Amino acid sequence: MKSIVIDPITRLEGHGKINIFLNDKGNVENAYLQIPELRGFEKFCQGRRAEDMPQITSRICGVCPVAHHFGAAKALDSAFKVDPPPVAKKLRELMYSGYIIYDHILHFYFLGGPDFVVGPDAPPGKRNILGVIEKAGIEIGKEVIKHRAYGQKITAILGGKATHPVSGLPGGVSKGLNAEEVKDIEKMSRSCVEFAKFSLQLFEDIVLKNKAYVDLILSDPYQLKTYNMGLVDDKNKLNFYDGGIRVTGPDDKELMKFDVKDYQQEIAERVEKWSYMKFPYLKRVGWKGFVDGQDSGFYRVGPLGRVNAADGMATPLAQKEYDRMFETLGGRPIHSTLAFHWARLVELLYVSERALELTLEEDITSDKIRNPVGEPGEGFGVIEAARGTLIHHYDVDEQGLIKKANLIVATTNNAGPITMSVRDAAKGLIKNNVVNDGLLNMVEMAFRAYDPCFGCATHCMPGTMPLIANIYDKNERLIRSIKRN
Amino acid sequence: MMKTIIVGIGNPILGDDGVGIHVLRELVPKTLDQDIVLEEAFTGGMNLLDIMIGYDRAILIDAVENPDDPPGKTYTMDALQMTSSHSTNPHDTSFPEALEVARKMGQKNIPSEIHLVGINIRAQYDFKDRLSDEVFRAVPEAVKKVMDLL
Image 1 (cartoon, each protein chain N blue to C red):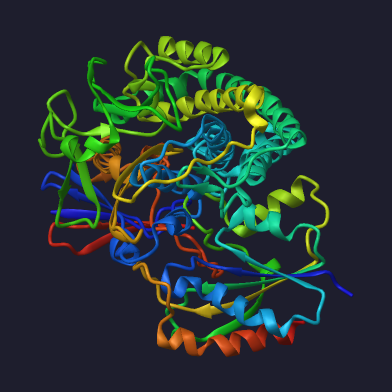
Image 2 (spheres, helix red, strand yellow):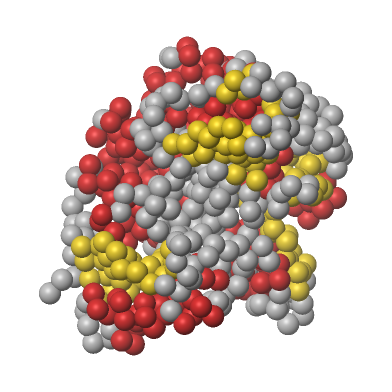
């Protein structure tokens, strides 16, 4: 067996490594994405005060602090048997919209989008925000920076700080909004709606009008027929903050809609000896190994999982774009991994519209922002992080201390599909021992679409971020090494 | 007098990764008489740059990974000369890239001096809120390196 190792992954840090195993004929037998997960979280939480969880969990990940913050706050609502007042829910959702705005803009323009905007064949040094600015122009660059900052500012006005939110408490939030702040957020939201429309137009002009890109989106290596999961409201419209967890099949039929408290009955986690990651699958469908299709229990979360699992968007402009996306890509559901990028932009429009709606709610400046808590117990929280469904589950003792904590994060939910997408992209590019030079780019594009979240640390040491493919012969001797910085 | 911000970077619940925060907290009593802003940041890239805008000088304190040196070794570097660095997380741009974007966009008030005081660590993936012995012992030296820059 030969193996190719790609390590580390540019623009996706946390020491992810891709191992590609070839068979004797020199074709891809298997490929794995290995991620060293952060460990010991449950133990770290034991004995800590439950009300500290929104702060502690927001430190798990530097990019998803708001998702963890409210995932935790919602689990605490449940643990302390309290339903936050309506305005508190609106304020949480509004703050959450700010987070999705900046996160989705960051991903499209800085991380995933450059593959398309600058081009999949462009040198890696160009496939970044600087390349996007070069191609799209400085003025557009300024708009990108401005609206990313708006998302941050909306989050900060409501949460204290965008990266260390402190507003989520069991039973509500700690801070309301005054009329001036609402006006400020309303203005920014309006601008974000326009920017989201512009971004979709940019996607149309650069990607959809380019046949080669559309062919790439629809090409076999990037198709994966899995189940889809996402939060939906009572009309089965996509929702980031609240709702039931809906799962639809590769045939688009609803498999189930369940409450987060039943997640352990519906989701199992498979352990494989080659990865720290667990691979969740749907118990009702079962484990069939790393295969897709109706009989395999894998599901996808994140922008594509969400748009597929929902029946539509709850805001008018996003609904129009949603319909257009499905129409263009050949109907429901969408199986193309690269369509994650398009779905992300449709969601950007939705959250911008939703933020605007929330600022116009009459009671948004109300000070009834918290309800008193009850006796502690077991609690479940679910929220749609930018990159997919996030579940927090705590067991709180009678003194209000954490006995047990379990989290299923978005990237874990996507672990199986990411592995298969990497494998399929590699399969298309390695034939009979010949490794296509585009291998690294194409494999990267396969997992970058998911926006996977690896262990987040903050090392700042100057150094290069090489991408290496090591190719071994069947005796595991290194015969070729492709490296780029 | 240069308007100065000192930023301790790191994840405070990821052991040695949070050493920048530990060093920053030691600096609080030492800089009370000076007009300096101290900030904790669990972030990188664009967000990190946002924090520094409007200051003449920024001093970053962060964990670094250099396998050739023992853990606990400290360094002072000119962050404006860095050509590449890891960002906080997979979803952000690197700090030098953020800096270049800001310059290209005509961003004003970028600090003219950005220093990095680094403390060498070994990568780790276990949640804990305490430092390892080697890195803990390096905190006073890192504090001194920051004070020497002021």
